[in-house]
Image 1: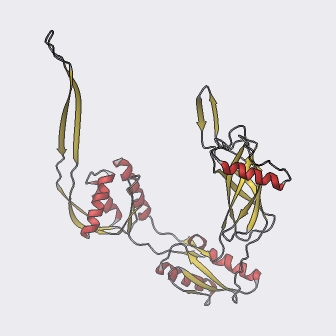
Image 2: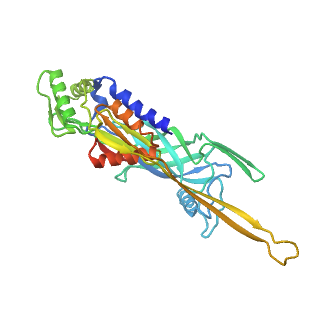
Length: 367
C-alpha cells in the first residue's frame, strides 16, 4: 500500500513538473444555456422469461399493468390477483442534448425498480419522458440490450455482470424542443468558466479581445464573462466557434491536498509547499491471543472435565524519532513525506497535524 501511495503522489509530481500548456477555451468554459437537460419516466418492460417482478411483493407493477390495459380497452375485474413473472416496472432516464429537434433519437437507460431478477430479452413499452417542469419531451420504446447473463439449476445460480439495468440505443424520440435564445439581448452572450478563478477570467478576457482586435469581452466576476457578439444568427455561430478555439493559459489553482478516507489515496497539486517541521511517527499495535485449554481430572477422582480460557495480551509500540520535513516544490514534499515510512492512514493523520501546525501550505480536503 505504501508503494501504491508513493506512485499516486509521484504521478501528481510528474504532472505538476511538466510545463503548463495552453488549452482551448471550449475545454475551460461553456456558453450559458448550452447544456443537457435530464429526462425521466416510469414504464413497463414485458416479454421477460420468468425473471420479472413478483407482483405480490411489488404491487405497483400490477397496478401499472392494469392501468395500461384499461387504456387499451381491456378491463381487468376488480380483485383479480395477477401472478405475472414476465413484466417488470422500470425507470427510464435520458439526457436531452442542447438544440435537440423533434424526431431526433436519444439513447436511454432502463433500470428496474422492483424485484425483477433480470431484464434480459425484455421490451420497453411506450414510456413518456418528462423534464423538471413536468412536461413530456420524449417518448421511449424498444428492445433492451443487457450485458449480463445468468444461469441456475438445482438451487445453484451463476451470474455474470449486472442484469437489472440496460440500455436502448436511439430508444427515444424527441417530441418537444427546449427553447434556447442565444444572443437575444442585442447579441449578448455569457461564457461560464468551469472552475471559478479571477486570474483565469482575466486571461480569457485578454485573449478574446486580442483575438478579435477590439472590445468584445468583459469579466463580470471570477466565473462569468460577458461577450458582445453579432446579432445575426449565422455570424453569431461563427463568432462562438472562433471563441471556443482560442488558446488560453489557465492560472495555476490554489495549493490543495485531497485525502480519500475510504481508499487511502492522497493527491496533491504542484503548488503544495511544506515549511520546516519536525515529525515523530510510531505505530501502536495490540495483539490478543486466546487459547482454549481442557483440564482433565485424574482417574477415579470424581472430578469434572473443565474447559478454561487462557488469554495473552501484548502491546507493542514502535519507536518514533523526530524527522525533519521540508519542501519548496512538490518533489521535495513527496520525498519528505515518503521518508517518514508511514502507512496511508497514518500519512493522513500526519498531514492533518502539519496543517494544524501551519507547516502545510495548502488547503486540506477530505472526501
